[in-house]
Length: 284
Image 1 (cartoon, rainbow, N blue to C red):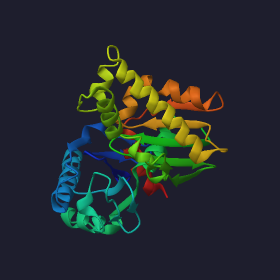
Image 2 (cartoon, rainbow, N blue to C red; image 1 turned 90 degrees about the vertical axis):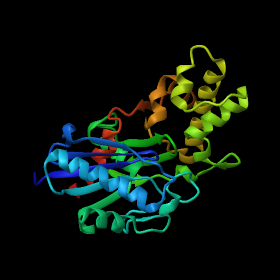
Image 3 (cartoon, one colour; image 1 turned 45 degrees about the vertical axis):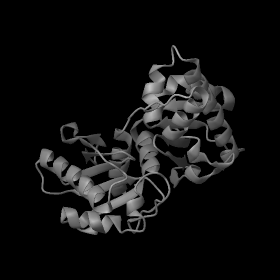
Image 4 (spheres, rainbow, N blue to C red; image 1 turned 120 degrees about the horizontal axis):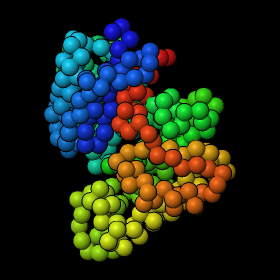
C-alpha cells in the first residue's frame, strides 16, 4: 500500500480515477471510477465533482487517502497548480484559480501530496512505459477529443507539446483537430447536425460525406505534423483519445502522407495511459 498512487485523468467531459501500484505500473482495476464532468459549470461544482470521484476511488480501495498524480489539460501551471485555460470551450471558470489548493481543501489533504502534469504528456508517458510506444526512442504523442493534446519523447526526456496553439491555416491547430471540427465540417457538407464523432463513424459505410471528412482530417493532420516538426518528424507517432477510436478511417491517410519512415500507431492503453503516467510522477 505504501507504493499506491491515485492516478487521475481529467478530460474535457470526464474524470477517471484509479489506484496504481507504482512498483509494477499496474492498475487496481476494482478501484477505477469514471464520472462525467460538465466543463461549463462553476469552479466549485467542477472541483467538487473531481474530489467526489477521488474519494469514491479511495473508498473502493479501502483507504483514507493516497498520493495523487493528476493528468490535466493545458494550458496550466502544473507546478503551482493554477489553471490558465481560457477560451477553449472547457473549464473557463477555473481560469487563474489555484486548482491544486482548492482540490486539497475538498480532500482535506496537503498540496505536497498532489503532483500534476499535462494530460498528453501523461498519456505518452504511459504509452512509452507500457504501451504502443514501448521501446521507441523518438515519439510524438497526440490525444484527440474535445481538444488537441501533444507531447514529445526524445532521448529519454518528455516535453509538453504546443500543438493546441500552433498556427495552422487561418487559426490554430486545435480548431482543426477536435470533435467540433468534425461536427462543423460535416454540417458544412450536408447541412445536417450530428452529436459526435462516434455517430459520424457509425455512418461511414453509407455516407460518403463522413468518409470525406475523415480523409480530410488525416491530410490536415499530416500537414500540421510536417509543418511543426520537419525536418525532425518523430519516427513513431502514437495517437489516442476518443477520436482515435475511429483510427481505421483516418490513420491510413496520415501514414500515406508522412511516408514509410514514420509509423502511425494507435495508443493501446486507452484512458489507462494517462492514469499510469500520472502515477509515474512519483517515480522521480
